[in-house]
Length: 230
Image 1 (cartoon, rainbow, N blue to C red):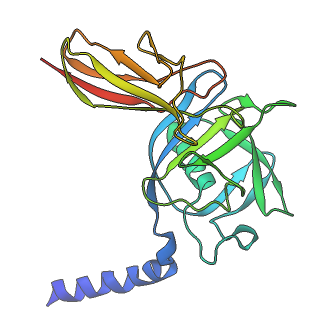
Image 2 (image 1 turned 180 degrees about the horizontal axis):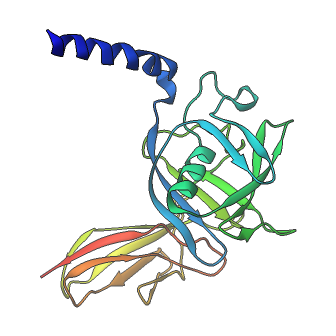
C-alpha cells in the first residue's frame, strides 16, 4: 500500500512537468555538422528541443520554430541544435537578434567570424534554409549543416560501401549534395575523383577508417566511415 501511494505521489508531482511540454517539442536527434573556414568544428548527433537561447550580441530570445509565426507549435530548430552542441562541446557562438525577423543572424562560431563577403549559412538535408535558424524546424535524423562561406559552392557528399576487405579496391562516389551532380577533382584518401565523381581507393590494413572528400572551392563532405576487414 505504501509503495502504491508513493508511486501515485510521484506521478502527481511529475504530471505538471509532462503537461507543460508540448508534444511537438519533446525533442529529437539530428545529425549536426558545423564547417568552419578551414576545419570541421563539430560533427555528430545532437539531441535538441526548442528553447530560449542567449548570445552576447543578441541577448536572450525564444528559438522554437514559432519565431515570426513560422510554425504553429514549438519544436526543435536548427539554431537550438547549434546552441545545444555549443553547450555540450564547450565552443562559443554569437549573433545579433533582429526583431523584424524574430531571429538571430549567426555571425561567429568557435572564433570563425563573418567578414564583408563571407557569412554563415544554414542547410537542412543539403537544401539552403530560406528562413532563420530559430524559424527552421528540424526532424529526427535531419542533416543540419552550418557552413561558413559556402553559399555558392558544391556541398560534397561521399557515398559507397561501408565494409570492404583488405587489399580490395572499392569505388566511392563524390556528388554535390544539393543536386546529386557528380564532382570531379575531389581528393579522397590521396586519390582524385573522375568526371563521373568516382574514386577508387584500397586499404592495406584491417581497421575502421574515417575520412572526407575535399576540393578547392567546395565544402568538404561529412565524415565517411568504412570498416576494413581481413
